[in-house]
Length: 80
Image (cartoon, rainbow, N blue to C red; front, side, top):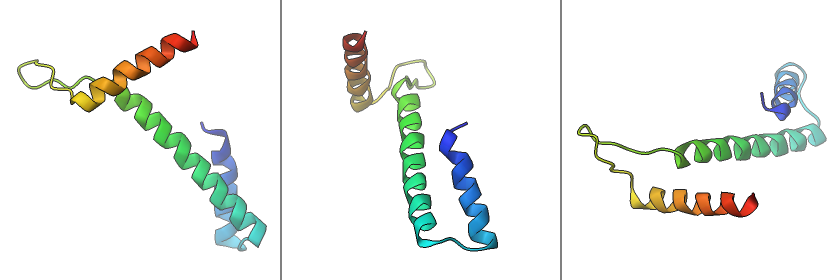
């Protein structure tokens, strides 16, 4: 579970029940932006590993995705 999700849920519950102070509203907005950033990163990571095949088994992965996968491979090798 994403660690900041607990705090996001606490603030959402408080917002429904009592309302939030201005500082809490700002914190909530920052946490939501960070959460979206994490989720987008996870989705991009998942999609970057895909290979798309047609019904005949031919690789029809878009060139843009193939290039991104190659770039990711080279970046990973540099980090090791």
